[in-house]
Image (cartoon, rainbow, N blue to C red):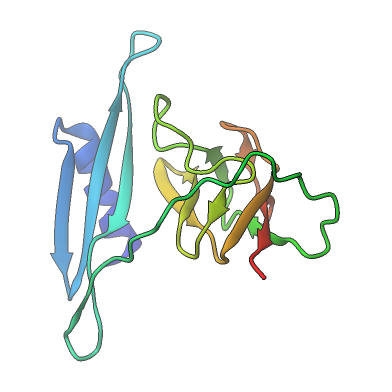
Length: 165
């Protein structure tokens, strides 16, 4: 599916009152979810989230999305001062950094929390698209370098992860 087609689908969802739309084309499926948040200044505020649902490999077999586990580290773990061994999670685009899927939801991760490969750690909103950013390593969140709602630049480090040894 090309970007122009996906943007058109997002516009359709945003302009309608439907909550989600799932589309299949050429062996790929996407699901667009409109998250309605309560109006804060008298005008409705919505955002659309695009997420792949199922992918197909060359043989036609279905690969279901990977499940991620969330566990919380003991709060007694001291913060890391030496950043030489830490792995950066950088923003893949210019956008706005969000710690949670909605304003009233719990954050994806917190300081000293254990993370696994593929676990969503934040969202970067770009052009009204909510892009889930995933951890590329197993480890512990050593530092969160961006505050909720702040703009981020391409390549800006958002998290420092202490990898498991």
